Length: 44
Length: 150
Image (cartoon, rainbow over all chains, first blue to last red; front, side):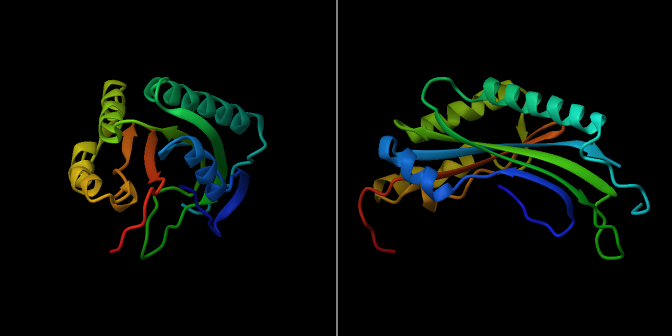
């Protein structure tokens, strides 16, 4: 749900370790569901 | 098309657009993710501006674009199939749609997987959902309770 592209000229990320999240969530829950919403705020 | 100027990501206009979009994405999450059952753990955020590819082989149709992607991670228990179908119902009620197959189609093999103790990882992830300028993607994984052989 992310992308790394040589065409990026601006890139600000707050990324997380998905394996770490999976371990943390599955200590308490059976399922992990990741929901991503994407939109564009500029285009020319 | 590629002679158009790149935008300045730090300009007041783009900052304002980015903030507005982030608020709309947050409102979308609030509207469609049930407050009960889905326990929120983490959020990742990716904010990028990039050049479009427009050449003899490929045409993006834009010179430059800025995109914000927000991913929320939830813990879930109970009847997985029912929870996901209910979630999709909330998505449709909020105006989202799927262009290809719906959740029921994705979960066609769920009962067979559950009966043979296969984790839901064996099921394909759902196809994306769309609402105007927004795209919503879902990924899932399950804590494996016991080993199984292929």
